[in-house]
Image 1 (tube, rainbow, N blue to C red):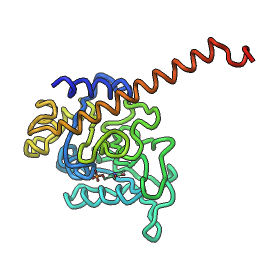
Image 2 (cartoon, rainbow, N blue to C red; image 1 turned 90 degrees about the vertical axis):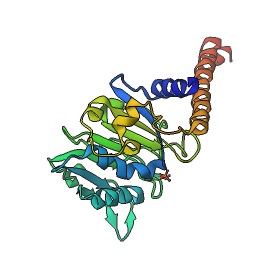
Image 3 (cartoon, helix red, strand yellow; image 1 turned 90 degrees about the horizontal axis):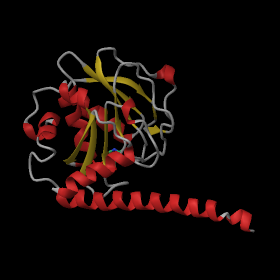
Image 4 (cartoon, rainbow, N blue to C red; image 1 turned 180 degrees about the vertical axis):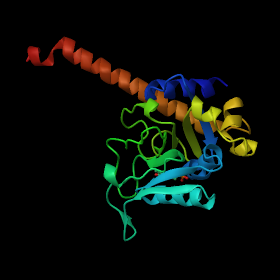
Length: 232
Ligand SMILES: Cc1ncc(COP(=O)(O)O)c(C=O)c1O
């Protein structure tokens, strides 16, 4: 499918995704990832360290806990509310954990990591639903990034996942095909009928973004060359 690949290329260009990452389009919304990430990426005798800074990261933590794989690295909850991000000294990452999970932008309370936490050798898994493509980030600092596309990229129900090939290589064999990153990578996100319309709309949004950036740069060049200031 042309637009399937074209969307991926546009997205990789805009995000600056390095070659050692895979891109997946998955259905089920961002919340679906709360469960399938630990199913795929936490092996026996390991955990997922969770930094809880808002309602969605709390839900994600609950999902990992149900699977018996959670380790709470930190929570900033006070009387049911989340008004701040943690100081580095408050974060306690389980050395056995296979990843550390964070939410980039807390959509409900409005906190956003300006600098992501230093998790040492533990890869970061980041929910970027609230701020994907709203600023430049270094993809290579993350093991996995996902975003429900409904905020910045397209219609609800679709989720884009950027996953490092090394995490795919060490993913668990356990999950059935429909829940398996490894299968989705092998099948190019088409292990069942893909959500073509959502990917098509995402393509249009990304294309509009590329053209917008191009026009913006062109305008700047015209202003610069034309020298609005010097002409005055
Ligand atoms: C940061 C974050 N994570 C997860 C979700 C849940 O997304 P979904 O409704 O696609 O499951 C949202 C909601 O938009 C969100 O802002």
